[in-house]
Length: 212
Image (cartoon, rainbow, N blue to C red):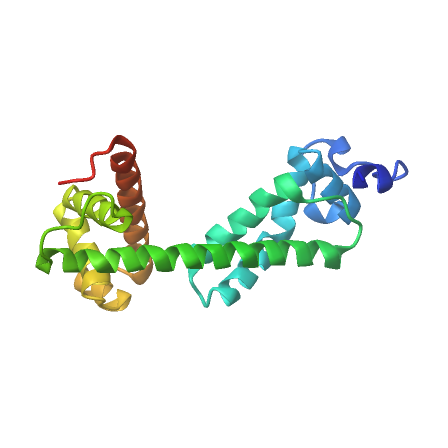
């Protein structure tokens, strides 16, 4: 059943975007907001973000125990999912529950991926003390070889940062102090290095060049 046919935007209520220009997010009714997002209207999407981004970010920080990077990704995922899956509704509590649930699910997925990623990184350190690598058909060995090759392509500072944080398992604060930087700046650098590693590994696996 098409909920837009069941719950149409009331014609008696003017659409907030009809006035043109910037419109305060509070001027939208919940029904106008969700129906507008469902139709892909940019003013409605912007209003939804303006109205709930701060609250959703605070919620995400709580469920991720203060992990700002994961919280930000979870919030972004929730808003992106609203473009595809949010249905018209006229109850604010129901809208908030939908956004919170979506952010919570995204945070859980990100957490699982992050744990798997750290596990793979941790195994790289033992490669140097192992006998010859397992056969190429061993999927894990292929990933580890690709990761080792990707690490070798990093600049010296980036490799040192990865080694300090993930091989030596040093606290973020210690690494930041040694580099005369801040926790946030170091976390930002780590995020960029991890993304570079991810792209390199994918490229190597796609092309079959996973050996050093």
